Image 1 (spheres, helix red, strand yellow):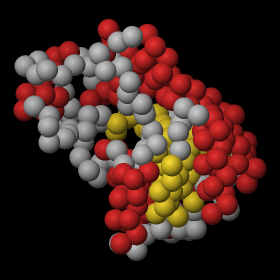
Image 2 (tube, helix red, strand yellow; image 1 turned 45 degrees about the vertical axis):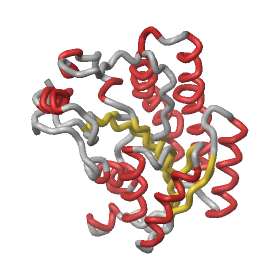
Image 3 (spheres, one colour; image 1 turned 180 degrees about the horizontal axis):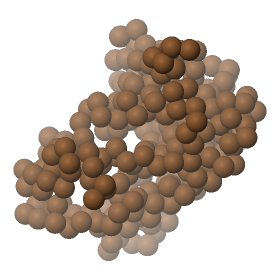
Image 4 (tube, one colour; image 1 turned 135 degrees about the vertical axis):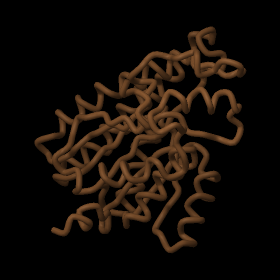
Amino acid sequence: MNVLDMFSLKGKVALTTGGAGLYGRQIVEALAEAGAKTFTAARNRDALEKVAAAHRDRGFDVTALQYDQGDEASVLALRDQILEQAGAIDILVNNSVARPMRNGYQSDASTFAQSMAVNATGLFVITRAFGDIMAENGRGSIINVGSIQGLIAPDPTIYRGTTMSGWAPDYFFHKSGMVNFTRFIGSYYGLKNVRCNCIAPGGYQTPDHPEAFVRQYSDKTFLGRLAGDTDLKGIIVFLASDASAYITGTTIPVDAGYTAK
């Protein structure tokens, strides 16, 4: 097989959760551009439908669906809906995330539990639901979207001179747990030819970021910048495709060298 053909997703069915968010939009775009029949799902279907419609206008096969990752019945209904429409699932990108701890470390304990229901238990439920189908079919790639904050501790210095902070205990907890969960899933499904890998993106620049944060964060990277609108597309297609057929159970930082020091 020609090496470039190994990156093609033509004939494959993909699901990205949380496809209307900062990371989700470019993940959906990458899978669709690489040729996959692409589904995207979240609680807010209206926002997803705008993303899907824009891609359909470009000639890509993108469908928006609704689900609640904190509700196992909703996850299973999503699985059944995709199987009914597409007949298979080859790629799952776990990108959905809930951020209920609005007051950071001082948030009510109930919000930590609320976060885990989606970001930990929900991750397990959706991975099992779709992973078992992949295992039955003898193929598949699961990609968990983690964060560098699952690999390192908060760095208060990047927020100096701003009202921002990084004190989100639930986020650090479940993103670090995702790293070893990725290893578990890679091991569990490995002999069924189902791979599981995790990416750990660095900071994603948005228009509302204070100049001080952008400067201080960028100084922590080798490339001197935050991530942009295309920086996850290549790694997603690589891990979703046959180009990474011998890679599983690993976490790959996509962070301009932030965690390499």
